[in-house]
Amino acid sequence: MVLIICVSSLTPVRIAASDLLAPIRASAAARDFLAVRVLARKLAVHKKDIGTWNAVRTLLLKHPEIGNDLVLGWERIRPVTGKDKTGQTPVEKTLNRADELLLAGKSGEAFDLYQKCAQWLKKRSRFRARVGRNADLLYPYVLHGMGRALYASGRFADALTVYGWFTPSYPRFRQTLFEKMWSALRAGQVDVALGAIASQRSAFFSRFMNPEAYLIQVYLYKALCRDEDLKGTLAEVSEFKSQLESGTYDYLEWAKSDFEMRALANLAETAVLPNLPPVTIAERTAEREKVRSFLLREFGFYRARLSEHLTLIEAYARLAATPGIGSGLKAIEKLPSRSELFRQNLEIWPADDSEVWIDEVGKHRFIGASLCSSDR
Image (tube, rainbow, N blue to C red; front, side):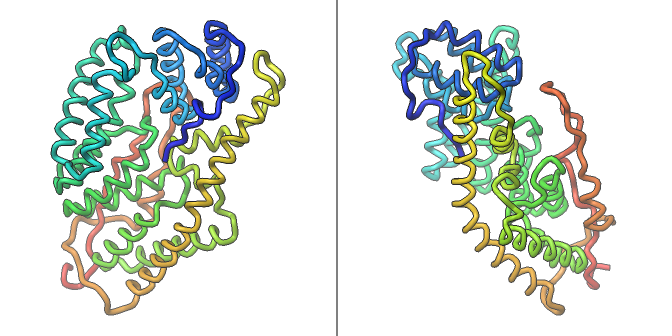
């Protein structure tokens, strides 16, 4: 899900591009991110050189709290340079082609192009002092494409390897954990599949997960004859459904589903600062309302589908919990209970903007044993 709002429905303003760059930098330094978004909108309609465009892009990448939607929108207005009339770099063209191939079902060809881009970016990142953080920040998006292409090709073990390379600094990190769960399941690695589910339960995210994660839990706990864990999953699904119906689970809780959306949720709730030229209170308020309206609209679309899925999964879980249904998987190793596994998932998150993450989210493994009588 991508929000592109920085280049649409813009009203031209009579301010020179050179007059906007300094206020953008000052606003970012003051963590006045609503003002950054307002000023970036204004700068977007101006003719600007590649140096100005790159300066703003680097600033947006440095501060993910501004919103990844703004980064993606900024990419679309890259100034045309040289003979390239598309405004795209060679690696961007290759990535777009890889995306097209993946959507067309040509996953093998798509993987080859993603891999080519990854190799180029990895080589380019060695010259980081010259190119800045751009190459490094694009790299995980390329890896994400590689993982999806491998999964679509049926290379589940290889996809699982790629999904193990992501760090929490990637804006779509929780989504990679979800895809890691499926890759592990299809690769037959039950311990990793359940561990990926536990990692999705990070205290940093919404406490509730994608409904499919519960479905996989139900299936695996039933196959392992872990009845108490199965009952715990059923109770959580029922609570999720109840909170959704009562409105306790609202658009802000939903937006905590990943770093990308969480940044927008924070913007929607941020206090509007007083008049700090060149951005007025009215402009800041309007920007906040645009973000809030987007989240409410998207949650409205998602809510109906979510309710339907939870109803189906709850019914399936109740059926699975019926005595006498199901068979067992082979024992893995001895494990603490489900609740203990999730209690271990209280990561330490950085308090600053540094790239150093000191938690182990995404690395969990289920080390439990099958409790089926035939496996004891």
